Amino acid sequence: LPELKLLCGADFLQTFQTPNLWKKEHIQEIVEQFGLVCISRAGSDPAQYINESELLTKFQHNIFLVKEWVQNEISSTQIRYALRRGLSVKYLIPDSVIAYIAYHNIYTEESERKNEDVNVAVRKIANLLKPDKEILQNGDHMIIKTLSTFRNYIMEFDVGKEFEEDLAGVDDRKCMLQNIFESVKSTV
Image (cartoon, rainbow, N blue to C red):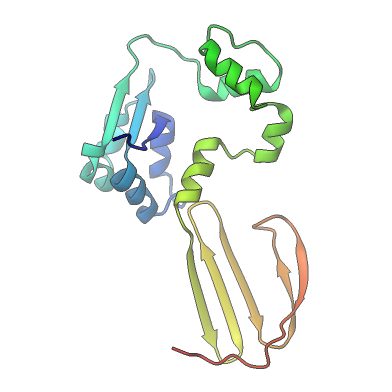
């Protein structure tokens, strides 16, 4: 059976150690339910990153390390950079990949603007990681928290009162909302 694994470079694997970037449960979900294939580059030591993390060590059976036997310092970031500027990447990636990129209009300046600096792998993982929702009520005061690895969003309001919702964490809009509920009754 085919398996879905996250293919990443050692630099991406190292981001699991960056404070406040990843939630522990999200890292666990990735390595436990899907697994990783990590390609090392000169100067990186993914085995060390794994050994320094209790969580990654626990699931190291589902993390596959691939050592480049031909040292190639060309990164996917550099490939995307070249493509956005219309430069040739022939001999850097297979012709079939170049054709696919051209056919689907991927990594152009326009498509990159739409993606807002979020790469394809991160978007796919984000879709797999459902955000945590927390709803708190204190009388007529409500707090709704949406917490995820990639973005945290908190909305507070009093029932029945107009309030301004700042969506800077979502899409940089400000909205004025009127809550139509007369009162909030807990059914729990």
